[in-house]
Image (cartoon, rainbow, N blue to C red; front, side, top):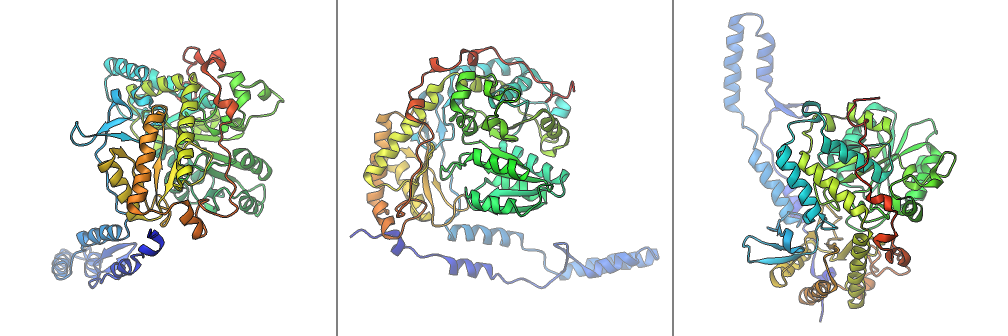
Length: 548
């Protein structure tokens, strides 16, 4: 008889609690979190009286230091690591070497040991595209492999200005600024907003990425965390402050671990109503949504943007209605996922970009990206904006996998995006499932455990790409079905008997339709405005500070 994980596994809270009750040795006095010696402190205070007193104080301090125990650094480290092992949150990394000429294959430690990668965030496989590689090769041959320092030291360069112009054009903003990663971009921008607006109140979705959470913490201002995508709660929080109080709503478009999607237009409505700025993280949406890959904000006005191409939609002229993307004040994104490179950015108004460039420590004091990386990212952005077929094929492959899993009762957390989160619900079993897939079936899907997701919601996160054909998908589907049988993992019917979780097996749960409509999925590259293939757009001045 199949046994579900609900009955098979308890928790390790008792063991963790035992570890938390670590004894401490006696004791130096503590001030501001650091151990101090009262004997040394007193001696130092009197050392100025005479050289004799100074010598005595030094001797006393030396004597005192030999009598007290030093801090047990290794003990602390060992106990913390042991806690992670006991609660099954310890991270194991597989040796995965993605093969550019054999995508989506990779090899493990031995080159002959090949696996199919099913969990990469290189969503469009542009990291291996010939045009991207060619741009990088030419640039590295001309300018070398290094950046030369921060922008302040190394200056800007042609690849930098080209990339920032392309990003601004993609999001139809006045400017863009490139950072070493989107983690840094989110932290730098959010913290700066709080540091310069002392009365700022930040409203943050509870599932926001760690980079946003850290940025909000560093902002050191009042904050409210609202339930995921709960706009009623968000409005209740907003209306508790006068309109004159500065406010910021921080949220994502696609939440990467569940695949849920924010209602950007309604959040913009609330921002307008209560006088708030909007900060939107499109990291897991750029390249995948909208006719040109600008993200979900572009997708909201799909036809208007498709008709206008890289130009501003006519409906957004002077006195006309703004698009949703226009209404968002700050959009952050990554170069390291759909664009196949590395780095992050923010796109916003000219004044905001100049402000970030001038004041954000995360930009000012971090080494800039190498010219070759920026040239490759520019080539990727240009290529994908003219190839809607990349986005449509990725969506079709995702739908194929989701449909097959549904027919087999494999529990997929429902969502309208490209993410396929297979619910396991137990950390140990999630890792076992991942291990069986790679060792038995030569399929790599990393287990997602705490703290990335909440305990009890552990999962396998599958991300199809344009290269994951139906033949490859069939192999994956059969393999996952085999793993569920071997480990006796709970299927949808088992979750139903437990009342459901995260939309899986929940009575009355209404699944959202896919963001891409059937008519949008039928579009071809020829249906795009020809201006998307125009030469590289004009360089911007705002990111360099040359002109005002």
